[in-house]
Length: 295
Image (cartoon, rainbow, N blue to C red; front, side, top):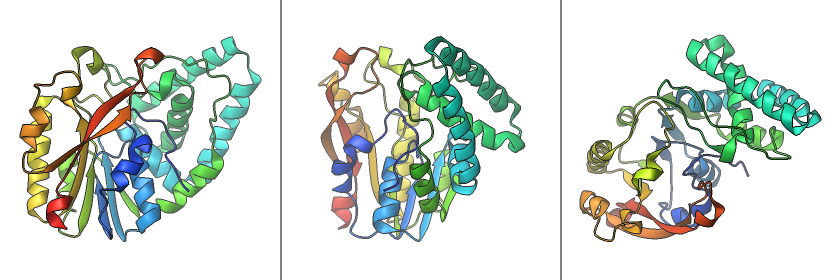
């Protein structure tokens, strides 16, 4: 089975069993406006083989990497294999030097935006994801990737078998970069839409991470709820996920009020990105859906 080829904060691999319970019986048309690591995407592609699929993300470099996996998989594998061989021959200090050299090169390519270098950029995107701290993707205010080196002893930089499987299932998928609202014209009454936006921070200190140069605050969450209302009126089947504010404040009804016309279920998830392992633990997340009212 194809599985996500990058680690992504907020990835849904651990919640798949709960999310699967919300799938409609048949999925012929699928849209994911915030694709991220794609755990739900790859699950649906293989379980339902939908005829029409659109995925989108505001992160240009993430979508470029999907495109390279889809269209230039063998060349990508060759470049990753070379990096993996080089990395494994080095001692820890030299690995760290290599990491920062490749991070600088990646940021140079990101700023230049030369499409002829998209394959190299995707190679470095995956390499950095496998060798940086906790697999984070974080950029500074200038849009430069700034996650530090991780001391992993034997990271799997090139998972050739999985990349080939991912490439196969992505062949009929339309990939877009941009605002999630641009997906609306694709969505109709036949579409199952999974919406996994940047989560509302549970605390101010948990709001440090930026996955693109664009912030997603309460104003943006309210705009997203309006988008969800709009596509619900088209008759689409919708499943959305988000953080549960009640983890830190029992009286915070932000999402309960925002999605009062939808079914809301609280499910347990593990927090995996905290630097302190003792602070990684089970918290609730929200699954928001109109499926119960449709079927």
